[in-house]
Image (cartoon, rainbow, N blue to C red; front, side):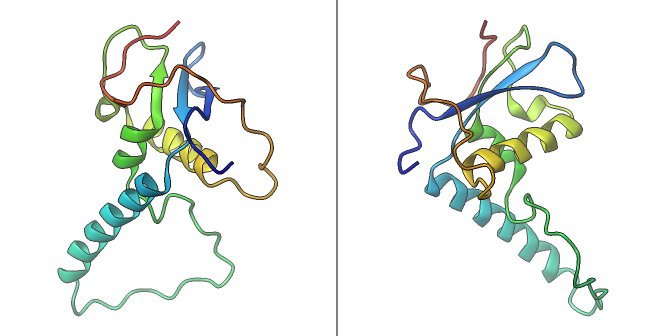
Length: 137
């Protein structure tokens, strides 16, 4: 998909029965911002670890799809609506739900080859302002 406008996916939250979240596909600029914020955070930490030796990684380690992105930025841009009954912001999510939603957003925005073609059809009801969120449906 060349354009991201209107590309959304509604997914059930696996660890919360009867709850869902609607996610939007992120633009290249939004993904770049999430990568930049993550790198800024990593460089800040690295400056404090000047002389610490890091352990060698196993060559077969699987890359974490969230490793290069800031979770907060992904959630802020990626969540369109959810089933919670009150107005909330992504900052109020618990860690488990935030990590899960961020992974779903990355999967929608940067699908692997097996996932291409499985995205939902475009929606015409996307707000330009990603937060705060209100209950939808």
